Length: 234
Picture: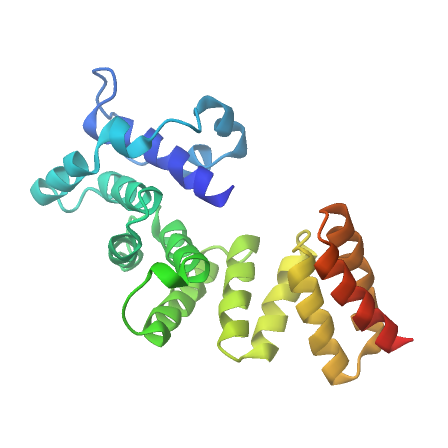
């Protein structure tokens, strides 16, 4: 779902940047919330390849002529992500995320960076710790700009969890949970942390909700693990 939203953004902004059906971009500042709005998903054929439709090469050539065009650069970033050119996408995300003024894409660029680091570790080259630390720094910038960004709290929690900072990860997962459901995998991890802290009431609450979610999604292995943890609390 997250990647689909980025693809929608790519398609929309590419039209504005390099021209779609002969139209030129007349907007001085893009409406990012409108571009990424869930209701826009029905306008896109998920089978269509946005890269072949608009061309990364065209966007790259355009950026060589006008490297300050944030519309084109964000569109290029999303296109690279869609094409699974993840290292190049990280490079573009870092460039966009480093632009502080008049930049409506800064937060979403860092979200894109973190999503790639979290979701595609096997496709990345270079020092993992460097990439993780950059993603953590970027998500902190994102949350400074958008404190209520629940997906950013979840992504940051995952990075901190995997980086060994369980206390901070628990903090961000708890914030995310206050804004909506976070899934049974994270709830189970949170329950294990609460068990280690001796807070069995919170642990049981998370495990019971995690079990219901795992069963609803048809994941018997996770449900068995959660039941085992619950039995240890009896």
